[in-house]
Image: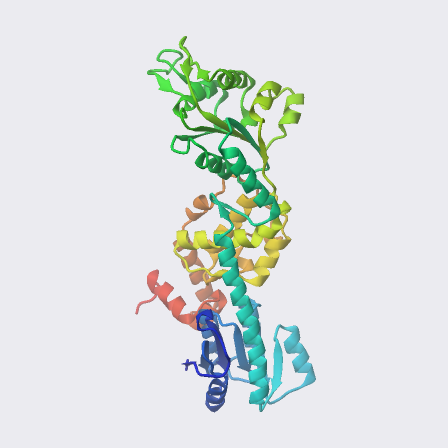
Length: 470
């Protein structure tokens, strides 16, 4: 039996969506408790079968669970363990007519927020529930404020509300209107490409082309042709004239990513192009006037590269008239929650999965990580979690294994969430459902609990993947 009740006991806001699940094998006790606790804005769901009660917990994701201790099939302690495993942020209250100090201590150790003796004093229970609802409302308001904060903490596609990020935003605004050349420095994964695009979009040439050249991805022998273009017959394979990226950026912006990997010979020609505002196609004798703003980015220490004779000093000073340094994620960890919420929202839309967020223990795990791969690593971790979860929240088990110490991290800048999606979300879900059904011996209720989803959700997915005959 599953009942949803609302009535007039506690003053609550209708739009907060606070819910309570009551599990008790005594029907009259269920009726009494649900009537006594009913209030506007509080959704009460009841179940006389503990397995059905867990289905309600998985599908409704309540803030509070009130459960009897002694029941057939599953005990209240079993229910407590499953709820805590599903989401430790849910407040669980156990009730029993067989109260003992030892069992009370054991319940609290295992995650219960209270342990009550039957017959329960309805006045005392209402007071206890009211306090828990107060806490739940505060958490809901915090989430709403986080949503508003996220909306107000976006600057040209860059997320941040820390002092370091506000300083970055201010610097971009000041520079964008006036720069001719800019150097963006920072570790891999900090978002240098986003800053480059923001500079272009806020500049007077925003309507011009924004042209990107990844200097680490171009073969040295073709670098000059790629950057400046060539004329027909200038080398083997040059069958026609070709415009270079510098010329294509005329009237706009040329973004040279990882400029520290540019060959020295090309550096000299780039310097000349920046000084004279003209380029010379390979094999041509006629210079061409080019008016393009240039943004360079690097994760290397270019000053050390100058000492090592790998980078031209004159080019460095030409590019770094204005330098914007990107902070590592470890330097502004106060933005972690905002970034998590942003990526969850983004991947929820991309994967077409209704994901509300992360469990508290998953957020704690992410907060403890040092994030050597910076925002890109966080993006990949959240993308992985959104893909792997079968419920509406991301838990520790859904995150990449290296985050909980099961294997060392693999540093792979190319492992984008888009590439991860190619692993097929549907095949992954189907495999997990099949494994859960095998472990449960075909019992759908038990398989649903293993997957931390409701039984109805499991049956829907089984029909979707043609694993049900009816």
